[in-house]
Image 1 (cartoon, rainbow, N blue to C red):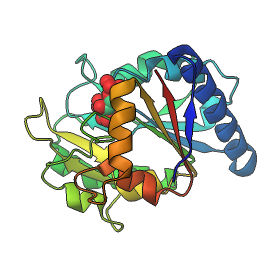
Image 2 (cartoon, protein in one colour):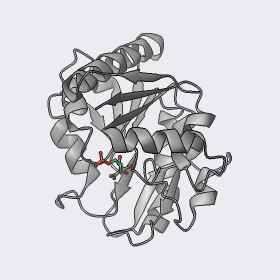
Image 3 (cartoon, rainbow, N blue to C red):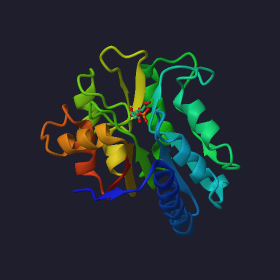
Image 4 (tube, rainbow, N blue to C red):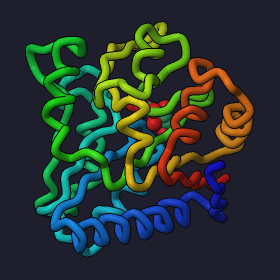
Length: 226
Ligand SMILES: O=C(O)[C@H](O)[C@@H](O)[C@H](O)[C@H](O)COP(=O)(O)O
């Protein structure tokens, strides 16, 4: 069971998790001379990512990739790549490895991306968000291809589209996320804490993908603030 760390407020959540992740990345740099970090999408993580980017790190040796991407160009405000680059602008020299590929579909890009990120695996750190529907990354309940993306032998990146989604997506799969040296779930608000409680009691991985990912993780923590 992943421990739940409760922070007094969202500022302390962002700062506290950033300090932990920065130390994880420094440890990887000391051990291997390089590090890899999968950043969360959505709206919650911007403060965390900005605080992390301000940490004194040799960012030129850190690969930063999105945990998932809405399949839209980085010029689009919905792009996770754009949000991550903006929030992490202070991480001078960080090696961003975006998922968006012009001229490709999620289906055609996924195997290319699996091959491209292979040298960065296992990830040193992955941080994911969660929706009230118990998805994480783009592992959405009810999505076509979800079971394949949750399989222990899934390739690192899969194409996946949530029912009624604005756009198709690509996502890191369960083995890529769970195989990270450190996996952190970053959530805020009472609704998500309640959804997490439900997810931890749900045995069907396709109903609660976040529960399956946390349950399979090498080392996971949940960080939450009201
Ligand atoms: O592209 C996305 O939005 C992410 O894939 C998604 O998993 C996100 O992390 C959660 O939905 C939480 O999003 P919020 O932080 O906006 O609530």
